[in-house]
Length: 617
Image (cartoon, rainbow, N blue to C red; front, side):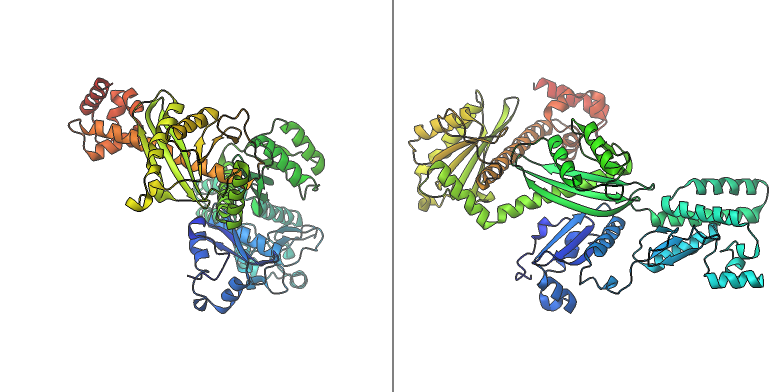
C-alpha cells in the first residue's frame, strides 16, 4: 500500500460504478482525467507501491493533492464525459491530445453548390454544418465511410472535383457506390443537395425514419422480385443500424437539457448537474452545501436555479429543458424567468419515464454518493471532531470534552417487539464493538422504555473495569437520548435513582434538531453548520439505525421460530415465506392462494400455515 499519499480515499468510499475521475494539484489545476468501467478497481491501481507504477503515472500521483470522480450510467457516457473534461481542463498528463491539433469533426459544406462531406479539425467555415467533436479520427472516418454507402455524396476535394468535371470521368468512389457523381451529371445538383441534407439529418438526430423507409422499399422490391435492389436496401438498413448503435450516447433525439440530482439531510445538501447538449453529456458539476436554515427540497431547487442561471443568458448557455427532482411551488414563474434569459421557451419539469428518468436517477446517485463522501470526510477530519467535542464541552459547561458518548433509541412495532439500542462514539468515531441492544418485555410508552433501558445500563457503572475488564462499565462523558423533553426527563430519573449525578445528559429531537436539557423549559438551538450538531446528528442516526435493525431481526426471528414448528416447513421454505411477506402481520393477512404461490408451498400446506398462524393470535 502506498500510504505516503495523503489524499488517498478509503477503498470502501470509491464506488464500483463506471465513471470519470480527475487528479488535481494543490492549486486546483486538473492534472489528469480518466475513465473507468469500475472506479474502485481503476483508482486503487494508482495507490500501490510507487516503484511499481510507470514513471509518468508515478509523477502524476506524486504531483496531485486530491482525486474526485463522477458516476455515469454506462462506459460510453464515461467516454464522452472524459472527452469533455480533457478539452475543458487541458490536463498536462493526458498525452493523447497534447499536440497542437484540435479534435476532429464531421462537416458538410451545405453552402456550396455541390455540398461536400469531410473530416476537419477547425470550425471556422461559414455555411458548414458540424457534427462532433469526436475523440478518435478513425472512428468518424469509419462512420463516414458507412454512411456514404447509404447516402452517396461528394467527399472529394475541389481540385479532384473540377478535374472530374473537365474530363467527364468520375473518380473511383462513384464506381464503388460511395458517391452519386454529380460531377458528370449522374444526379442533379438539387437531388445531390437533398441527399447531403439527409446525410446530415441522420448524423445529427439518429432519426430512424430513414431506416423504416428503407425497410418498406426493401419489402416492395422483394415483392416485385427485384432481389438485387432488395439486397442493396438490406445492406443499407444494416449500415444505418450500425451507425445508430455507435452514435447513441444518452438520447436518440437532440435533447438539450440540464438535469439536476439532489440528496440532502437536515444539515447538508449535495447537488449533481448533468449538462446534455445534442443528446450527449457535455459536462457535469457538483456542489455540497451546508444549509444555514432548514430548507425543503423545493426551496433548495429554487435556490439552486437562481444561483446556477443568474449570470447566464442566451440559447448557448441555457437549455430548452431544465429537469429537476421536484417542482417548486413557483415553477411557472421560474420557467418564465429562464425563458426570458434564454430568449425562447424553457420547460421546467420533473422527468417521469424513459431515458430522461434513467439519467435523473444517475444524477441522483451521484448526489447521494457526494453527500455520503462529504459526511465521511467531515467525520474523519480530526480538527472537525475536536471542534465538535470542544463545542459540546462549552455548551454543557463540562470540565472536559465528552470523549465517550453513548446514545439510546427505542424501536417497536405498534407497541410490540420493543427493542432499545445503545451506540458508542469515542473521540467522535463509532466503536461498533461496544454497541448493545436491549429487549424490553413490556412498557407503557417510549418514556417508560427509555427509563428501563437507562436503569439497566447504569447499574454496570458501579462495577470496576479492572475486575472483569468489562467495557460496558466504562463511564461515558455524555448520554444522548433520541427524543425531546419527555425522554430526557425519563433518562434523568434513571440517573437519579442510580445515584449518578456527574454524567451530562441531553436529548436530540429529530424534527427541528433541537437539543433538550433535563427539566429545561426551552431547547438549545445550535447553528446548522455547527460541528457539534453534525456529530450529535450522526450519533443519533446511528442509534436509530441500530435499533431498527435489531427490531427487524427480532420480528423475523419470532415468526421464523413459529413457522419452524409447523410440520412440513424446513429452513428453505421458511426463508422463502419471509422473503415473500417480510413480516408476521403480512403473512397472517395473506390468503391461502397467496401463500400457496410461494415456491415449495402448495394449497394444502398453505391452508395448514394459515390455520396455525391464526390459532396463535
